[in-house]
Amino acid sequence: MADAPPTVFIVDDDPAVRESMGMLMATAGLRSCGFPSARDFLAAYERAVPGCLVLDLRMPGMSGTELQAELERQDATLPIIFLTAYADVPTAVGAVRAGAVDFLEKPVDGERLLKRVQDALGIDARSRALRSEAERARELLDRLTPRESEVLDLVVAGLTNKAVAKILGISRRTVETHRARIMGKTGAASLPDLIRIVGSAGPR
Amino acid sequence: MPTARKRGARAPEHGVDARLRELECHHAVSRVIEDAGGVVHHVLLATARALAAACAFPADACARIRLRGRDYRTDTWQDTAWRISAPIEVQGQQVGTAEVAHVRRHTFRPEEQALLDSVALRLGRYVEQAENDRRLESQEAGLRKRLLHLTRVTTVGEMASSIAHEVNQPLTAISTYAQACRRMVEADDLSREEISRILGRITDEALRAGEIIHRLRDLVRRRESERKPWSVNALIHQVMPLANMDARLHGVLLHLDLEQNLPQVVVDGVQIQQVLLNLIRNGVDALDGQTQPEPEVVVRTCLTTPGGLRVSVSDCGCGLPETAQEDLYQPFFTTKRDGMGMGLSISRSIVLMHGGRLWFERNPVRGTTFHFSLPTEGGSADG
Image 1 (cartoon, chains in turn yellow, blue):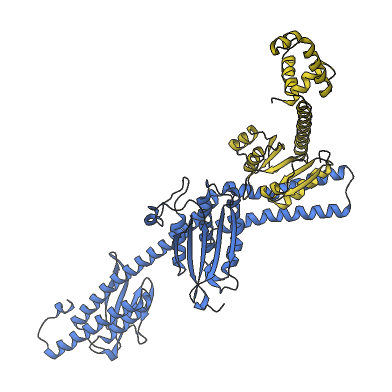
Image 2: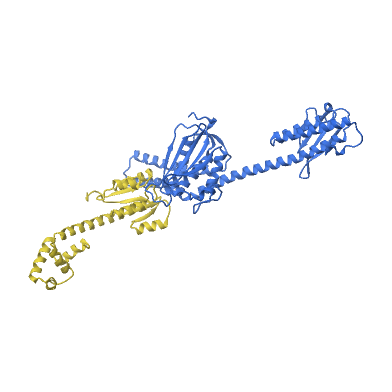
């Protein structure tokens, strides 16, 4: 699924707006999929599919900002470009603060929208890459024994083998053995490499 | 009293006879004023006849009343030398004359002059009253018309942002279709059929935008009241694009639950749509700020008693405050932050003018339902 082509999800209650937006996306070689309401989108959305959202702010039923909040709650980091009929500045500021990529006024400048969609797809691809790197790093670190993890923490904190041995009350020799195992299990080629893996795994 | 001028010794039976004719004449004038219901020319014609009949020689008498350059006379009227007259005055100004003439030589008696004077005085008062009434009525009708128009204009003003959103949708579609089409042309990636299809879409959307403008113009145009047979469901369908503008902006869904084959109603379509729009917008406003998953306003129609149907607009919103009940229909009463408070007051008078009734009830669970009834055409409920 991670290799699926990115999709531009267009959520607007107006069928003609959805269709024309879809055509515009197609001219830039982008795949798109339209939904008449926020609820329809939520029901069909699979987080594994990369892409971005082009979202009308005001719709009957669930509004654009409500959908944004719901995705946030589900920890789905799909970048959002909001479209609105008139400049509702406070809502726009709120939406952008809540992480929206941009806020465009209808009728939209097609080139600008395509540019922002490309930006959004870039953001999504990067965040997905980061996320998968983090997942891989966490997976690697999960293979360590509790003792190895302790050693790792101290090594990454910049302590020498001697200092680690002293803190843990074990011999320097044992520390070296642990370190070798850690490097083996994580596939890290060097200390900087090891630090990078710990960094991308994020806080435990 | 007209008989006050009577002087000298006359045969008593003569006096009684004359007195009787006077009373008959005044009675006839009173009756016609009551019956004519403000139709001035009926009163003047009947009065002329009564004046001629009240003469001592009724067979030879004729009468004419001139008012503001127009004549009202008995069929036998002749412009003879043997006549008496009295001025008709409205607010101290002579506006006409009442005359009685003899077609043969007879002398008029003083009491006949006195009767003519007193009838002319009454006619003056009557005409003054009738003209005042008519002026007030037409002023009132004019004011009512202007008020209805003004509240429609205000409604449209209050809907400005909804209208902007609504017109923007087809404009957005048009502009996006056109931009997509241009990119395809530039990339040389477009068939004739495709171009034709996209142009068709652009046309549809432009017409759609035009339709919204038409609806608005119908609503705000100054117009004479016009009643004709309508299907109430058709009126509801027609007002939906306008009502939806507001609903959409507030994230509210409008739901229709209309009974089919209802008999027609004879109404001023724009006025009834004004009522519908008011009630729907009230419902949408009542839902504003409510935290509900699917806020909804439902419009229902149904046949009620024979000869009547009912339209109901329900919301599941905040409900009316207990204290609102009394003042609800008063002009300028509002529970909204930015309302003018004319909606319900105007809506109720429109429904009343159509022979219907407007009322509300609190829903069992939450929100409010407003109902109004309308008599169906011919009072028949066969549909």
